[in-house]
Image (cartoon, rainbow, N blue to C red; front, side, top):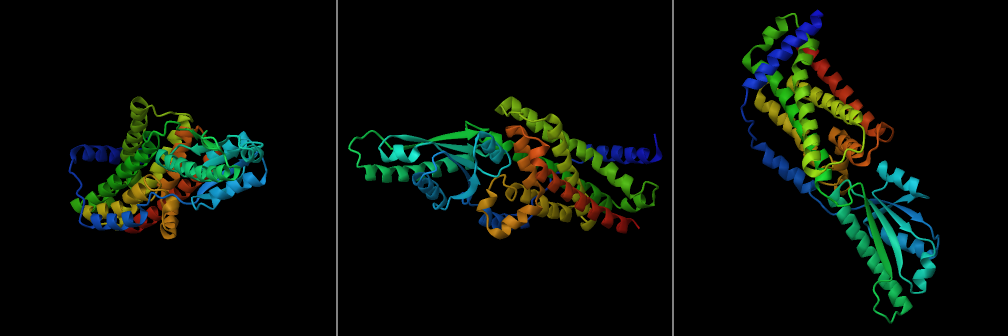
Length: 376
């Protein structure tokens, strides 16, 4: 065993004993209610706007264009382009380029004008059950209004029902079960909680105990010290995240349509960034209370409320939408839902993986720079 690895192992063993000994409950301080008030006041909005809508128009008539216009002009939907076939529909939803797809059948205009009932298919991405339910409700309202106009124009005398009938289809979560979109958010929540907060507090604990000076004078070195400190929390956080997945499969029938290797890789990548962020916080804070406050303010609460886990990002004000781009959980949730629910891999999720990689590299660089300055 090399000397460097022996040093890492010694620090890691010491940290494991410290984790097992320290069972104190972390208290929520007075600033938390004020922060909740500000974030909830702006982010708590369940009204969806600008839902990306792709269209497969098999009729290409003025009537079909009017129907598309009714969706776009409603204020709820934003036109996301045409999709010519089923493969293009699947690709648009998998890439999250569209949240819903309107499929207009051939002879739509002619049949509607002649008084014949017409079925219009509406495909919705069901990875977020609450959003999918709301989107289907919007679509039903729009189609009902358009159908009423056709009925009036055709002067229908029978009471045979609506002229236009929406046929919604929800992909990836047909039953719209909330558990299937809550579980990925819980994974991000648990990973951020155990990684960032625990790592930050473990390093600051050394400062409060007065043992940091002894560590600096030892032959361990900053790199071996940081690795040894973070390895136990990486293992704990990874085990907790995977335990949530396994329990959800057993209790809530959570599907695993993708690759286990891709899941482990994405969770590990997210944890590297989270652990690095915890180390960065430890270089700023001198007490555990300050470290907890900074961690809660900059990682835990944004993960809960600014990642798309609870509140749709598209419904937030532009300023908060811009802030979400620096929240790694935003990309992590898209990755997890893609792997678990859609069965897609890195070829589709590469943008999210690149974003998490950039975050991890930047935060690691900042943490290393500050730690080396303090170690000198």
